[in-house]
Length: 154
Image 1 (cartoon, rainbow, N blue to C red):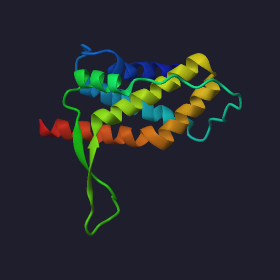
Image 2: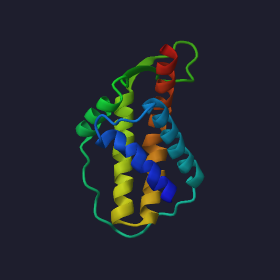
Image 3: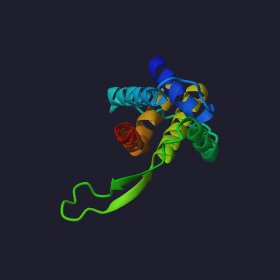
């Protein structure tokens, strides 16, 4: 669990600390997102729900997170995506936003961190698995693909 909380801290900093001076930011971001994904895969299906009632987490400012990410990763922006990857005859394209993807992940992880600090480890782990399965997993995949596409474009 200490590994998960350490990874969360590393990722959350991208949305809370403007203009971080870290060498190879894109590589470090990839490494931390992959580590987060590994932690998720290690606990899938093994996190029983905490039955206690806890107060709601505070709202975290999405716009502030997004602006901070922009200061750290100015190249993260819009990308094309296929809406139905199994449509082989005439697939429809859509538009994604890597900054928005990372903002969502960070906002979700800020709530996981809050739960570790204010509810219970069991509750935090259950919520982590829940948000990864239902929300953040797709964002991680999209960011990793976008970072790879940007790298190949350079």
